[in-house]
Length: 436
Image (cartoon, rainbow, N blue to C red; front, side, top):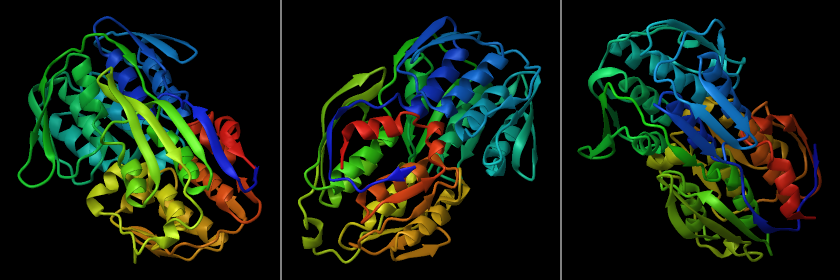
């Protein structure tokens, strides 16, 4: 795909349903008593993988546009097929937790990217609970032999991961007694909110120092609910960044999820002097939903800031994990640049996102230093048009589409089709708000 520099971003848009919330709503609805209706379900390929796997496990569901109706069955049935999670780590890790509590064997696999991702972080707690989980050196495919009598555990996460937390809490629904997950760094809380919405109480207790302990009492069966899924803020982040950085821009995004565990990207942009505001917030289906307005900076605004460097606090990294490549692009445009450390988890995403980001920034002529756990860019600096590579990674493709809009000269993005994993509407929506 060829991309020209933009003159401004302007308009009012909605983005598709939140991917993280859609995964969780479908998974919990499949285990509930009764029929659930999920409105504004994510159009992403990742969430499609979750629905396909649930069908293979005997769940009756219908999809009409962005509305999914699911007939819960409380107990899933053994699939005659290997469960293909495609590119979706969320699908694999959450289904692993669900299947750990069912008395049959299952095999979970995925594409080459997913088969390279680490799974010991879920294998360890699930085996402590009584399931048997086989892998290939800690990576997929996963073979799971579930148990009808899982043991409740206390589990402290060694890596801040909402997917790992969700896996253990979902397994805890089928365990005897109270299962508690201890997280020293807070991660997105959609699983806890969704379980509570479906009538499964999850209690939260602050830990001494930082973090929280999250507990669920099993065994318990969710009760069906209708759920309205808000727009995905991780998808909207790309438009927000473009509008904030390009002078004369004025963009409004409505019906957007503004969960406090997901808005750190907005808070970070605000701290960098950008005009981003959240208004009209209200609770919908136990999630905060609101409107975001972005006004483009005036030319030279950030160059006036007396800042030596902008170092992202390590404790914020889990709340920014999806947006870090995009923030690296932002860093090239602001005084002091940006430094990202404590983000080694980026090495194990759909691509090695640290290496992918560094490679593309250097192709655009940017000064960037690579570390084992992050990177640092200087700023402000002018990006040049270049041939950019998505590395088959949807978030790299979208981050460097935004970089190309900021560049001096045209760019070519190889592998632009990878955006369909999370945001199939990305390019049509972008075209509706960008002016050249």
